[in-house]
Length: 164
Image 1 (tube, rainbow, N blue to C red):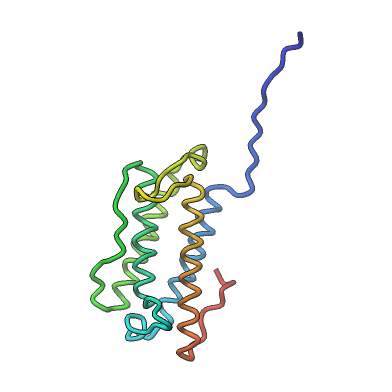
Image 2: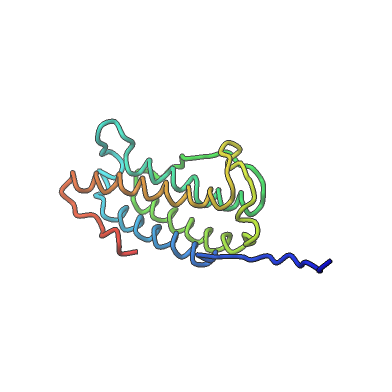
């Protein structure tokens, strides 16, 4: 009988470093979207009962940094979408930049073989590390689009979405 060797073939379409760069490109665009808002409207303006853009940003802040830390450490944390920004755009931007630093520090600590590991993000959401990261990115894109609608309704040109 012939000696059969099992060969593992790994196919990558995108590396973890490229995925982080892709996400950070979206984050830079979302940051410019925050900057485009007049301060008052950032915290008060909404359409059709949707949350303000500041509230949407707090959700994104509550997910990204804590979510990546949870993935790396394997310790479940509660989802917290609220912090005292004192209705100041500069405080939201500061928190956004701090989260960018957290992502740059923690994301590279995710081992490539762990991207398919099953997890329950924030103790609630079943998926894999990969699907959870994609959700974090997709959710940001979704909420940024809501911000674009707000900006356009205020007569403000949003940043070009392709300039990431």
